[in-house]
Amino acid sequence: MRSEIIAVGSEMLTPFRQDTNSLYLTEQLNSIGVTVAFKTIVGDRRKDLVNSIRIALGRVDILIIMGGLGPTEDDLTREAVAEALSLTLRRDAAQVAALHARAASQRMTMPSNNLKQADVIEGATILANPNGSAPGQWIDTVYKDYRKLIALVPGPPNECKPLFDAQCLPRLREVVPPRFIATRTLKAAMIPESQADKLLAPIYSTYTDVDTTILAHAGDIQLTLLCTKPTLEAAQERVDELAEKMEEALEDWLYSSEAESLEQIVLYYLGLRQATLAVAESCTGGLIAQRITSVPGSSRSFLGGAIVYSDSLKTAFAGVPADLIAQHGAVSEEVAKALAQGIRIRTGATIGLGITGIAGPTGATETKPVGLVYIAVSDATKTEVWDRTFRGDRKRVREWASQYALDLVRKRLM
Image 1 (cartoon, rainbow, N blue to C red):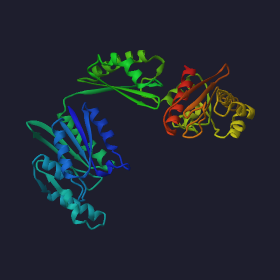
Image 2: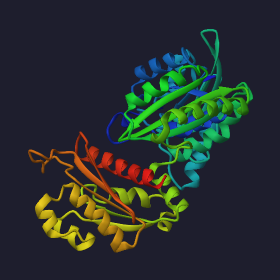
Image 3: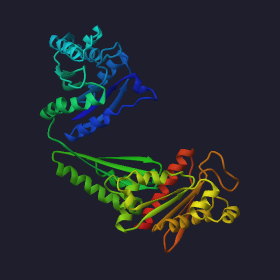
Image 4: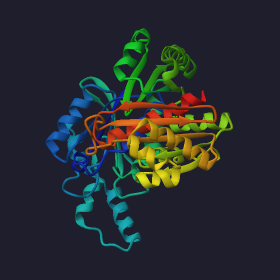
């Protein structure tokens, strides 16, 4: 069965708020074999809400509407659903009493506009909300000759999630045919999205029962495989079969078969080799260290490092000779090599990582453009240096540089 989630609230159409509930609801729906085909955000305008609800009912079996159940004038979900279904609203006496009791328990005088929260759509079941004043509603109805299941749930996460789990999921389990969803997430580093798709499309396109999505961000490719079958075993078998073929095709670009981050994989290899890492960062300004230390337990393999933004600190913290910087410039192959070697020796780490570059938007020269980055990886046997020029703004250059640097460490450890 297919579902749609409608998030109601004009605030989510501004730069200041975003819908986070739908991620949780999607996970819960997937757990019972229901796919989410659409997610819609609608502002607090009744006409728009009615139109969105009617569109949703024309294309999915299950509709979850969250938000717009409060007491204010712009809380219009109840009214919009009733209009879309050509049903009436009635004020439920028991719910009115419950609202008064709630206000009394908090020693508050209840404003009269709170009473609209007791308005129930004709034929709906009230869903108790122990964490707030706005109850949910459940509607099992027929729309244009097709059965539709509609759930109205409150918007605040501390109300939405418990109510959905306790009131909606059990009802859905009773009517949803037994279906199971299996997923796998593969990750690859530093392969262009178009190249990845050219490589993998001939493989995944033959698996018509598995949905494959590709998401690219800052040198990271995430491939999500999803399959729905009557049994979890059958779904998992199809996903695993496709994943195995894609893993073979990706070769060394692949770094994770189970959705781990690149920094997690680097730490895994460091632990496996009983090795340690230290970093000397210039243009990334500590981003690499931040990514590594975001992983719990990273202290077992990551010794630390230094942000050596100025030339003087490159010398003081990583032992880069001042005359080397004067001769070649702070952004150079020679300085990157000296950073990696210096931080490795000074910290006693197995591997030293050095990075220097021009993140922009200023600092470029005729021979050294914005985005130019030198990355060096050093161990007791050799020190190698790579240079890349990343396009984009300062944030993008730093993200790509940190991704490339971590991937180089991964490959050194493989």
